[in-house]
Length: 383
Ligand code: GDP
Ligand code: MN
Image (cartoon, rainbow, N blue to C red):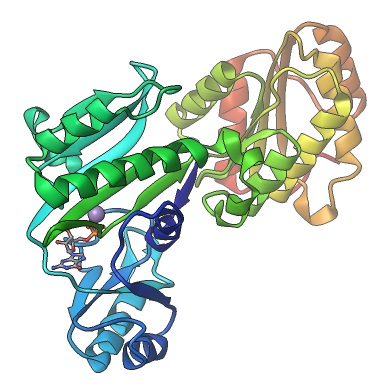
């Protein structure tokens, strides 16, 4: 999932001729001041924190300014904020428009209908979750035909628009559909879509690009910033790897076993951190790579919980043993291994020869790894 910050979303809007306020991005108070001084941003203006979380309006992350000095001041205040856990590094300055009405428009995928869906509401400017069911009109869209004329007119009438504003929405919806389709978006949302005189202007932009289409959109590669550097490496190696806050690393195979292992650790007083799903592989090299990646995440202890099926126990054991000699001194961690299933005897033997015992029971393994992590045991194994 590639979530675009508002200003990036608006750049995509511009490409599809969605009407926008005039504006520019600033990364320092002085830059904000000079944008207004040079008239790149007209006054009065709006100064908006560029963070991925919503609710900025209510949270004091959207401010107004009448002069360059006020814009500088507002930028200083906003850049100093941490908004919902995210440091604000840039602001968007835009001309402040006189809003007659605030509307809501979005295109997204409806997973139960398995179709794209257009949603519109006359109650824009508030979080859409707070709008009552009746206040939101949903129009499913045929993915091959696209947003048809009658569907756009249905939206126009649901929003009570006529004349030039109606034409403006019709055009905007065509643009929005093209954007959604051609950019492989999972969500395109405008909230609020403002009625300004006779025309409509997108005051906010929320655009999420579908990850599975990333090969078609190298232009979004640099904004894929919701992944940690290690998650990025894992992705390149095609390893399912997620970093959480805890200190226990989990290596398991299959999403079901991996999730269940996290649950059991949590219930036993452990704090699972990194987890890594080996999936189905018969390549010990991939297992080795996975282990080295785990070591880079510096967990306090690692629980290897494998059920041998497609991924045989001996494959995992061989991959693990190969990895052990390659883990740098400072990145070694205590390991608790439990490998059961296909070729269990061979796998257990390979591990034992390398000095790692494979435990049979889930409970004893979990207790051991939780104790190791909580005790902050010295970085002993694997070695
Ligand atoms: P969000 O709260 O994070 O979704 O941020 P928005 O971009 O939606 O901005 C929040 C609110 O600021 C909007 O609902 C508007 O009421 C207000 N706002 C944003 N831009 C303008 C503008 O150009 N003129 C006026 N009058 N209000 C604006
Ligand atoms: Mn908004």
